[in-house]
Length: 182
Length: 86
Image (cartoon, rainbow over all chains, first blue to last red; front, side, top):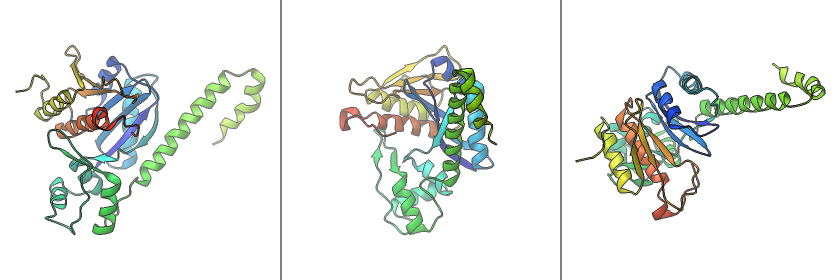
């Protein structure tokens, strides 16, 4: 299966780091700046969890010190991405959009690129697919929400450990055991 | 037709669109895996993420082209004002 998701990183990446990242994977695209980095993946994998975990490992293995802090999905989707998210072929989606297959009333595109590629809001398409096609598609799949919660919790844990390292001995001795919860 | 050295035709087309739309396309030929980048240099850009790194050898060129176009859309400041949502 093909899984498509966006990972959020805790900082921007330099040109050398971008080069190292693209050396580690060829199925993600990096958007970056001082506010952080997002990497859009379209990954072949056996399951959602393997797709996300291998991508996190690729990133954190390629650039020491960078951390993945969350995962989500972009709302603006191409025809190919609609095909991936609904588990249909791109041709099937093209026919839906053209009104030549399915119940009609496919949502209008949100934007057309200067070269003519169309994009849709996923929330519109997901509603249409659910209500008109009876497909079991979610606006945000449960697997992504769970993985996002775990990544955020992992980040909070790392920050708590850093705070304890920076604290005095007594604070560390009393509060430290709270982090040993398992 | 295009002046970009990228090996994938769909990516070259998307880079043309980015360039024509006022984004700065910058090949950094010395590098191996990263082909270069596309920057938003619009003075009204309030988006902290203004750079798209282009993969030299994307697994799927249609996907890479779509993602470049999504970056173009995200930086339509001239037409629609800053787009704060991600």
